[in-house]
Amino acid sequence: MDWGSLHAVLGGVNKHSTSIGKIWLTVLFVFRIMILVVAAEKVWGDEQQDFICNTLQPGCKNVCYDHFFPISHIRLWALQLIFVSTPALLVVMHVAYRRHEKKQQLRNGEKFDIEELKRTRFHIRGPLWWTYTSSIFFRVLFEAVFMYAFYFMYDGYKMPRLLKCSAWPCPNTVDCFVSRPTEKTMFTVFMLVVSAVCMLLNVTELCYLVVKVCVKEPRKTAALK
Amino acid sequence: MNWAGLYAVLSGVNRHSTAIGRIWLSVIFIFRIMVLVVAAESVWGDERSAFTCNTQQPGCNSVCYDHFFPISHVRLWALQLILVTTPALLVAMHVAYQQHQEKKLLLLTGHGDPKHLEEVKKHKMRISGALWWTYVSSVAFRLLFEAAFMYIFYMLYPGYQMVRLVKCEAYPCPNTVDCFISRPTEKTVFTVFMLTASAICIVLNLAELVYLVVRACARRAHHSSNPSSAKSSFYGHKLSSEYKQNEINQLLTEQDGSLKDMLRRNPGLQEKGDRCSAC
Image 1 (spheres, rainbow over the protein chains, first blue to last red):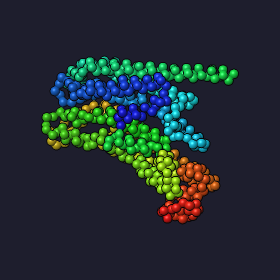
Image 2: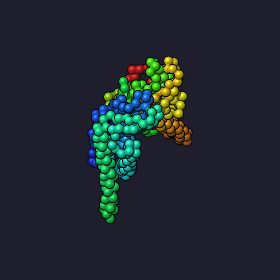
Image 3: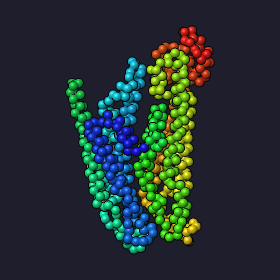
Image 4: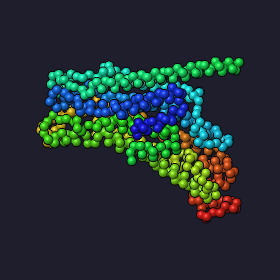
């Protein structure tokens, strides 16, 4: 089970999304997951190996690394991407439930084609609208929470070159040097920007859905009159 | 055979599960297996090479690591996930057996054209009768394995927290030696995460068990208050509406017995000109 399987699972959601939702999914997979897998993982690959402290004291390096990097950027991004893509599964489950209901309805009446039923696209109306909107809301929430977690843990988004550590068993204060700090800062900023773009897309999609419903309602009441 | 292979095998079971069962499967694959593969394995990747002891005594490092980590978290989780997902295969086997029986029945009643045989594969089995017991046993085994592994974790690594420093006195280490573990905080975070996901899965399994029992009791109460309703299986209902043959309905309700006995009890079928090669 890896990112490819997640792509297969979420590909199904694409059919029932709005256009903005489809753009968001593409940005997620191309600019975040793909960049994480092909580039970022290699940049952070030697993070502990090449974290060097100016001391021969055994254990000092381990303790200082653990003190300054409680959870690595790569793992945080992986968790963020998993959490952010999961609300879309609510929509998948709702659509599957609607298909099941439709199948029950049709079964009592005439014959039907299973393949056609699988291919029918459900419009985002009624309960599905609420499910879809909640999934977008949760996406925005998770994105914001993770961005805050990043900011809180790493005091800003810059990777310093030098850290001063005085945790036991390090004698006094020891200089520790981070490997590839500039490259890491670049990738951190890149992932941050893409995360902001995704949040913007989600907020736009939310507004679009709300406006669509508000515009349809007066039109419906006007038509009835 | 890797996690993707397991996913392929279990996706087939998904179709015959309850809704809670499907949610459980998604939680297992996305929040446990996927997190294990993309994140946890790299956190524990350097656990041995970065385990440092404050000594130059050869062998002390190896002995202390082995003493404090008899089996690594990552391997324990992999075993847990394999054992927890395997009871679903019992259900898959039972479903395959039932589909085989239905196909045989179709062939004997003379409706063995490819279209009907394909439909046997595609339709969803109702969880009733013997399949209900198989399904409930598989859920019970899942619960048992989850609980057993959580207990094993607690026994091996009390408190679920990864400490920064362990003091080791095993031979050949001289006296007591300080040993430092790599990435203890990150490991604690992931241990707690996997523990939470495991607890959620236990709750889902319990909910599914309760749902199945309540549904079975409700069905039984409905049947006892309304005895005239047909006890036919899902497939029997479909056939009867298409072919309007009461004999076939009866045949399908007695599907547990041998097929020969079924046809002997219903000579009406043979009168209609169906040749029974199995009789």
